[in-house]
Length: 148
Image 1 (cartoon, rainbow, N blue to C red):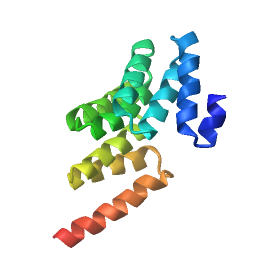
Image 2: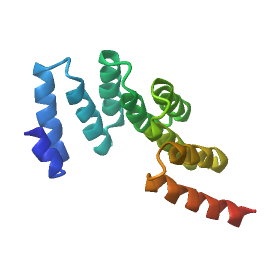
Image 3: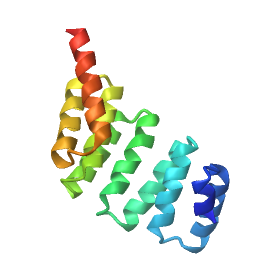
Image 4: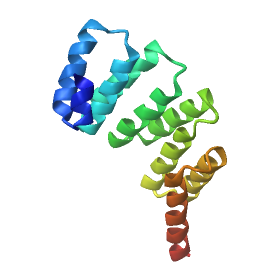
């Protein structure tokens, strides 16, 4: 049922359904991950972090959980922690381009365009078809030209 609410973008009801499911399946990392995603979208960043932390405890070698925890950390002002989480996702899975992409986005938010550009270029080395990275590179190159 939670998946249906999620598909319809009825996030509060989806959260409720996944919380109910979690009561009976405390060891289910998929439920925890979905709860992390939903609570992030609801801007419940502390709850989102908690869900991903629990998923990481259950499945510490899953790169996506570290990558996912980075954004709520960033929203709460934890820039270093967010970058560290992205780095951990890349350490676990060196070809995990989502980790490089999110790290690039963090650097964009902190106005470190050189680091951002390096990360987006790394994304394209791994996955040349990932259009969002190519778009960010074009945007950053334009910004950097205007500043020089």
